[in-house]
Amino acid sequence: MSESEISKLEQRIDELIALTDQLSSENSLMRERQNLLVEERARLIEKAELARSRVESMLVRLKAMEAEA
Image (cartoon, rainbow, N blue to C red; front, side, top):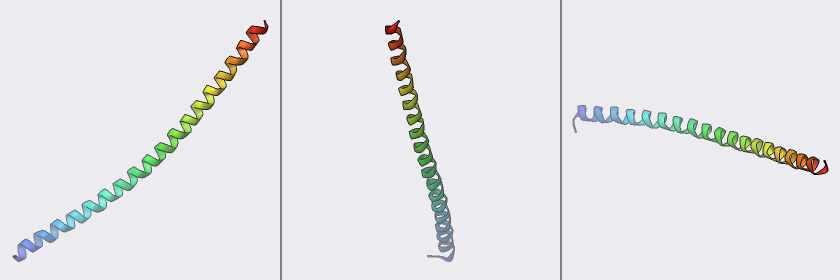
């Protein structure tokens, strides 16, 4: 192998290492973002369930008041 070919291979390897580092960093950030979104989704589902429960409770009370009248 010539000195020029070795130099090109070294340069390409350095580029691949840099790309691997960049992709690893992006992957970590995306995993963090996904975890935050999963947590937010769980909180929103919990809030929606609480609201649904409260509305159902109000409906039951309204029907009871209607029946008394």
